[in-house]
Image (cartoon, helix red, strand yellow):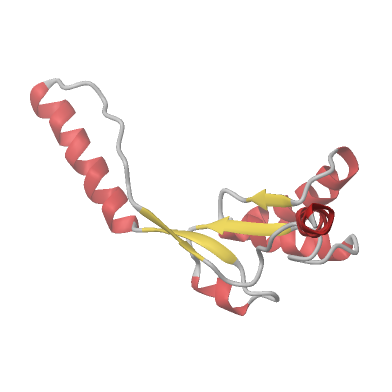
Length: 130
């Protein structure tokens, strides 16, 4: 159920913040990323200033989160066609399973940014080079 993916994101954010120091997260599905967004916000973290966040599926709701969620778009039709073609090849010809590559596209919105530490190092590096 979609609510459980959201809840997993909320809970995952809280757990991850207790155990790890990080500047970015890539979620395996947009509903999980929506929950992560809520969980990080509940913990006082700002997206993308503190943590960059990227989802997967490019759910239409990505445009309406705050901030809009960067996400990886993939064609469900291409997945279905490739899966059926591979299955038919396996059934008809006894072919082994195959590694399938489906093109994706990163849809950049406002939830991902360069980590502040990197910007500070870059500025310090430039200043020290003069």
